[in-house]
Length: 103
Length: 213
Image 1: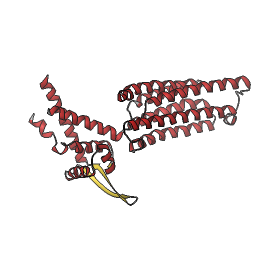
Image 2: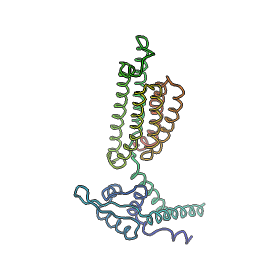
Image 3: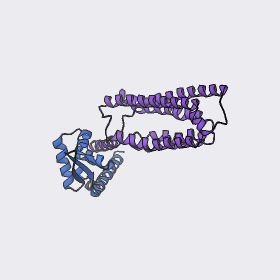
Image 4: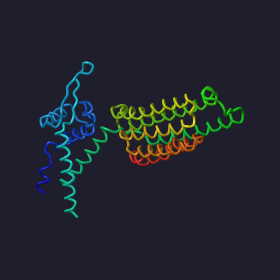
């Protein structure tokens, strides 16, 4: 039981961070505006959570200019993909084991 | 308590993965309309063809005579009318559905869907024009069904996965049709007409009606 919980990743223990990783798992990349619209969060919210994920090296941040406007896009790193997959597996195991206990 | 939180997490993950990578505003009803237009088109085409056989249809016509004949032009017009009506209705109903769900109609998911659907289909359309050029008329109907099926299978990754079923049905129907040359119109009526109607009703019941309630 302890083993399972240790795989639950604290870095993903927030709705916005979970959302950002989910989006980046199935898309090659996503820009700031897309994330904001999809998750229904504020600028500051997205900025702080992407920064937290970047610090963990779970996502890669690319800054560029499109029509002279700054554009930031985010990409899930291999490390981030692996960590998120482990987090999902842990969630699944946890729910399964709890269901067994309840039955 | 914790259990509920994790369950919520998982449904949130699924929701985000779907919403960010799939276009989910595609209207089921537009499939039904497209199917009806196709069947009406097929009936109209049937009348025109039997009309022209009664009059002066020349069975030994060469390819260029086929292309330039009034018959082919009329059939072509019907096909274009069906296509424009079907796409127009689909855009109208899909826009309405997107507005109702407060989703954007033209975002990265719909762009991806359109590109991935029309790329194989355009290749198929061009290939059919080549068939027409060489006078291989009989294979045009099956060929377009096959390419349409492949386009749907390809596009299903970017919208409801259910679209794959319609794609495989059309693909198989197209392959079958290659063995019954001369009955292309009937195969079209089934593939573009009947299949669309069945699929549209199924999609409407599964997604649209539930959301409307």
